[in-house]
Image (cartoon, rainbow, N blue to C red):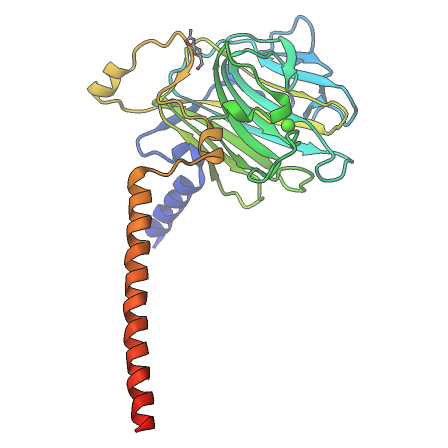
Length: 327
Ligand SMILES: *[C@@H]1O[C@H](CO)[C@@H](O)[C@H](O)[C@H]1NC(C)=O
Ligand SMILES: [Ca+2]
């Protein structure tokens, strides 16, 4: 009796935990990249903590506040230890809350895996023209025409240092994937997980208080160099919010690679995405292929012909009947 229950529990645990979504993947919490309560020594000078604070960031015993609910604030936390893992996962427990009415709050926060650290700037409080990966939890729609995207919106960007993040367009022209995530002023815990496994970037969210992970972003062929840094930054402008980080848990993922996969894993020096496709491309214009157009015209013509034939038959029947009636 006990065994089936045990199996069921294991199964459930495997399904519920994002860490074990792929069979054969193991994960280990890496303390040197993680940040958990009570944030021992963080922010204290001379302590041997693994994290640095920057800007207006404030540490309490229950959360780290990147920005308070006040105008023109900026803050960040940066891991001191360069990441030398090939496959990893970052789980961030966060809370975005404030007095502002819906869509009168901002600006959100960014989770980074970048070459540079501790450099304040214009992209959610951090450096523009960055090299690496940025995951943006954008809580305010700056671009006026927003038909497709409902905010707060999570988006991803991979940069080799040459692309600039256009704040007035919410980074849209260079976003490689994203989803809506209504994360603000919630009473339950909210989490985002970024997984980088065999060069596949996936982002999942758990924001409904149901202990359930929902897919948000999934992009294969993402090439990120080793030795970059994890960080989280945030900024407020005219619009404000409290941007709190409760924990950052980084896991090393261990997964079997086939000989072929190992061969493909050449050393990456510059961040890039294979077959790069910006999100904007498929939103703004979807050029109809010649074949699609041909089929649409063809079946429209066939349809019209069928209708015409039916029409003629019905008309003839009607004529016959009226003739019968008259004679
Ligand atoms: C950086 O990315 C841009 C845009 O995708 C590309 O044109 C450029 O060649 C890249 N530079 C390097 C050094 O890879
Ligand atoms: Ca924005």
